[in-house]
Length: 559
RNA sequence: AGGGGCGUAGCUCAGUGGUAGAGCAGCGGCCUUUUAAGCCGAAGGUCGUGGGUUCGAUCCCCACCGCCCCUACCA
Image: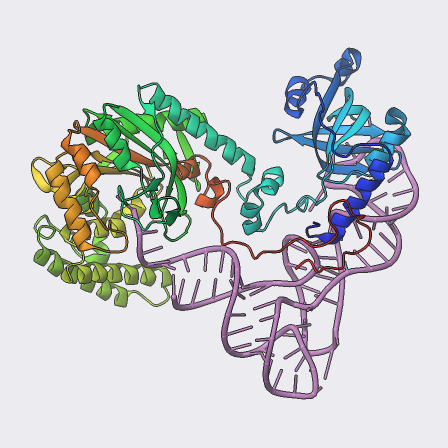
């Protein structure tokens, strides 16, 4: 059973035996404490030394040994609990011979309970003068290194329990605080929706038909039905079925699964909040979204904005709003790529094609004019020219239409600039198969996305509720094909629409990214307790079975 | 997928074409108000894996594995 580091494991196992020999149970059943570590620190942290002496405050408290400083016939330790640390002072004269021997056999990481009285040390630290010491659980493996903590990023995620005990990130925020704040975000979101009459519901995660987003799925198998199922890529189509069923306001917070790459803003398993409300449209949702973000940030950060990577992001001000076209024009890099596209340029395939050729040539010429010493500038222009080229090529080959080309331009030129909260609305209908189109322009969908810090945080639209239109769009998707397109039409969803979906607006919010924002985290893995990692090579533990004496080196190799 | 970087003691890292060092942790000793406690001592290594060059490789070369960063992909 022993795990690496083997020598330390065996050493601690040996101490465990010695502790038992002293008559202590190394894994007792309970420890009725009078205070938690945090309660003692909060309740008495400001009390003066003389006060503590006269009041003679007795406490019984448990925690993990995070630091040990032994001095012969006395010693100090720090007990960790609730993310805090409390000092204890163990003196031979106070605890007696047997308990003092136990104290000398403690290791960093052990869980202990103490009974004693509060005092202040010479240096002023609030401390428990221990009268009784009990071992509550022996730690057979060591804590992370005390200076650097868990520096190995991979190990921080794999052994999150250690990261939570010790973890200070580079930004200095303890890992524990990130996840405490994450639960606050979820609580604030639930309060927001519960207070407005939304029902929290749970819809299937195993879907017979893929839908609700464009993404490659995970596939699993149900034995009794002998059928393959998809892990859901979005709950959208089920939630809208509920609106058909008369749940006018619903929301769901849970995981979606997308079988795609992993990077600083993507995880295969991520948490999304989706909500739908009948008798609304996307404009109303933009207003609601603005309120929601403002409230959640205020509630979780005690401020109307957040510092993200050194930039202050202000949720207190009205959010910027641009149509996708406006955003492309506003952020168009005219110095690098020539004049911005006109309405005519974006109108038809041919016009777009010749515009892109011009822009690509402009960027290319500009690239050649930049001195070779400006590596960054050359790189940027190279990428820009290549992007124009790729969009143009896909356009000519018919893989994408003008709408998707516009979206491509948006991503390339505008998205990185959207640092302050900004709504981008009026998306190409082409890339919005579940959204209702504008009455005055069938090529434009009533859809918006909220961008913050260059990240897409929310995506909402007026839901398409015309079943015949929806059927045409489903069929077009299936015909167009592609790795992330649905393989078949979801007829049951269309049947539901035929029963009448009220005019409805719906939205999805990426919870992980929102938590990144409010915790100043710059990788999505930082805000997911156990992010997906490449599976570790199997290392079956080796050595004596539990119960066998742990003395001496086990003959089996630990690998 | 392309480009770059890394892999040495349990951890964080030095280092050299002649088979290795520090700090911390662990172990032994001293120490009854310390807090990165201190002092003394001993121990700890197939230098990622496999090939090659060489009298000799941890170092040079090749391949592989793993990890990190950038770019690309992914609404």
